Amino acid sequence: MCLRAPPCARTWKMLAHPEVGVAADRPLLVADDIHRHFEGLHAVDGVSIEVPPGQITGLIGPNGAGKSTFLAVVAGTLPVTAGTIVFGGVDITPAPA
Image (cartoon, rainbow, N blue to C red; front, side, top):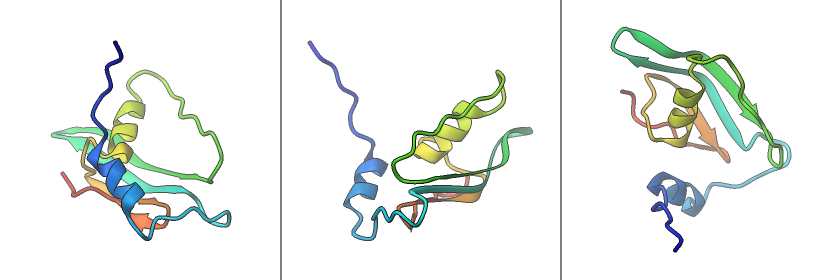
């Protein structure tokens, strides 16, 4: 028996968006100055990354550095406190927390 998680609505919206395209001369993903705060805790504080199309990119750091939180913000499962996320040239930044 194979169990599958339901598809992320945000992913389907991005794939179905008519403006999303992958051009070799621009990054596939741009996360700029991402911040995510939980009450008084700054879990992610000003992280920026550009991922070119066709490239495998890793994110490393010590425990508690905010890697999982950053990826959750980029994936849309957590809203950003500040910053922008652009995928395929389309701003997909979730509403601020």
